[in-house]
Length: 535
Ligand SMILES: *Cc1c(COP(=O)(O)O)cnc(C)c1O
Image 1 (cartoon, rainbow, N blue to C red):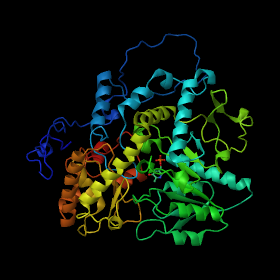
Image 2 (cartoon, rainbow, N blue to C red):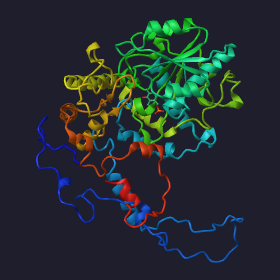
Image 3 (tube, rainbow, N blue to C red):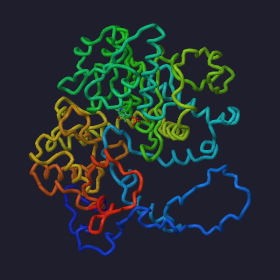
Image 4 (cartoon, rainbow, N blue to C red):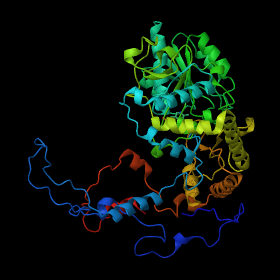
C-alpha cells in the first residue's frame, strides 16, 4: 500500500515517483510485495491432502451410522501453502496496527499490548465458565473490581456485566426498564429516540415490543428539549439519548431532559457508546440517567469487531438495579466475592431480576483487558484520555472546516468526533468517491452517511493516542482529496486506483453475499468467479 509515512515527510508535500502500482502488467498479477491471492478452493485440490497419515485399519465402527457418505470436498494444501494463503490475505487488510483509522462512532482504535499480555495469563485465559466457583476466585475478583470502576466512573448504583456488545447492553437496559414498569403495573408503549440516533437504538426498542417515535433535533444538532417535553406523557416508557451524541456534540440539556422524563413517569436510557469523550469528567448518574451501556471496545481499549468479541456492561440507577439480570458478582461481608444466580438470588434480596442475557457471566477476556487498561491509567489518566480525545477531534475539525462543510462547527467545539457534510462538492462527486480517494492515500475511510441528519455525512474520529504529526499527515491527505472533490476531479469516480481491488459492488455484496464456494460452471469465454470479483 501507499502508506505515506516516510521520515522527513512534510505536510502538503506530494510524494514523487512513488507510484509502484502503475507500471506494466505482471505475469503473476502481483505488484512487487503486494501479492495476488486466489481463494483456497482455487489453489488447493480436493483430492490432495496436507497430511500423510495412513488410513485407519479395521476396528469397530463407533459412528452409529453417521459415516460420511461422500467426499468432504475441502481443498488440500501443504502447511506452507496454508500459512502463505492467510498471511497474504492479511496483508490486503487494513488495521489499526498499520495506520490511522478515522472511523467515527467507533471511539478509540487503540489496543495496548499490555492488555493482551495480561489477558493471556493462564489463570485468566484458561478458566472455564463451568468451573466450581472456588477455583475461579481471582477471575471473579477481576469482574467485581471492573464492575466497581464502572459504577464509580458513571456515578450509578449497579451494573450488569454480562451483555456482550453495545446493542446487547441496550436490550438489557430496555428490558430492565420494561421490568420496572411491569412491576408497577404500568403498560407504557412508546420509546422516544432522537433522529441522530444509532440504528441500534430504535431496533432495540422495537425488539423489546415498543413503538418508536422520533424526537426532532435543533439546528445546533442537539435534542429539541421543548419538542421532547411536549411529547412526554403517560404512554412514554423511556427516551434513549446518546451523550455525547452521534453528531459529536454534548447534550447540554441532559439533566433537564432527565428531570422532565422522570416527572412524566418514564425512564432515561443513555447510549454510552461515546463515553470515551467524557470519562472522568462527567458522571451520567449525576445527569439523571437510569441505564447506560458502556462498550468496553469503545471506551476501555478492548479490540473491536473482528479483533475480538465486544462487551457491553450496563450501569443501572437505584430504581433499575433490582431488575438487573442474573448472574452477577457481589462482595459479601466476609470479604469474598460471590456469584449471585437463580439458586441464591433470594439470599441476596435480588428477586426481581428480569432473567438472563447470557448463559454465563460475560466476556472474561474483555473484562481482563478493560481492567488492565483502567488500572494502567488510573482515574487521573482516564480523565486525560477524554481530554486528549476531544482535543484531537477539535484539531481535525478546525484544520478542515475551511474546506469541508461542518454543519455544527459554527456553534462551538465538538467532543471526540467531527462531523462534515458533502456541501461544496462538485455536482457529480459523492462522499463515497471522496472515501475511495482516501484509500489511494493509504487511509481507511471515515464513517460515511451516518448520522442521517447530515447530507453525505462524514464522521471523523481520531483516537487520543494519535500524535500531532499523524493528524497533520491525515489532514494533508484529506485536504488534497477534498480539493479534488470540490473541483470535480473525474479520477475520484474510479478510485481507488492503487488498492488490490478497485471499486466493488458493495450493495450486491451485502444483499446477495456468496457465502459458500460454488464450482465455476462458466462456459468458455465467460469470466470466472475470481475475475468477476476483481478488477
Ligand atoms: C457502536 C454503537 C452502538 C452499538 O454498539 P455495538 O457494541 O457495536 O453493538 C450503539 N450506539 C452507538 C452510538 C454506537 O456508536
